[in-house]
Image (cartoon, rainbow, N blue to C red; front, side, top):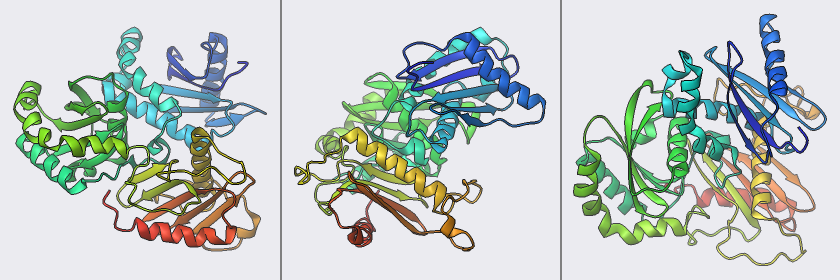
Length: 416
């Protein structure tokens, strides 16, 4: 296991037969003896009515999770910033990605392991994308990455009309895996379903149109729907969920060009704001490097580590790369929601507080911050939203709260 970074092993829960192995930064597959030992420890604990969910050594963390007493996932990580929250959500996302692609019945009623292995190959691109360090954060937050486009009202009106013409209530416009606009009923799907559907579209090989069967992990895990996707320009797709009708050919030839060709420029403009996630016309304090804004009541988020339309060289010579910024914001979000802020959902279990000064207080913190030589972070939790900001280190600590509240007011009525 020398040099191990992050790997995921899928096995049958009853017999422990390996189904697949995927990894990030892993040179080769783990030896069968190691996989067998890890699974054996978990199975032994289960036989003794002991739930073994995680353990760690000096430099490696191992987590186990079994789904429907049928599929077991083991994740092994040597990455310092891979928290238990991230790894647990990774396993949950991976399993529901498997449900999305092949359905729950195939995973619960395993009749032929070799056939299951073959069927699950269709999941590999999506699973690999969940394992990769991404420009999105919806996999961790369990909300949907969104983009604020320049012409949101026009795009929304077109999407609604296009969906009605195609006799579907579920439509969505996606730019590089981020939702630009969607129909009202699309937003009524479970947050994880919407997140995984956009992840699926972004992970598939480019194609002008696609008719793809999908199972909704929470809404319809055993009965498939048709996911129709149409590439408007490279990187931007319009998607819809439907039943047996209409046909892919009918929508592609009779509707796509009629509705979307007049909006070619607004559609292309979605790509220009994709990295920042919002237009350059929205001002931010010059000290802000990254932003994560979560609308908890709507399960949507804006995320960027390129908060400034034009960045100036840092005066102190300290400059964080984009991957470093993403890692810092993900780690700060994890710290805040597991240690200080109230649970994101009423049924969600949080880790015990580590700060001793909070002992005896009946309330949870609504704001928190960290400061280091290379950056500062500030988190703010309101009833319906959360805001996390990454700052340059020269921004005065006493100004962080004011800037955070000003930023929140800037996005108060943002159309996303």
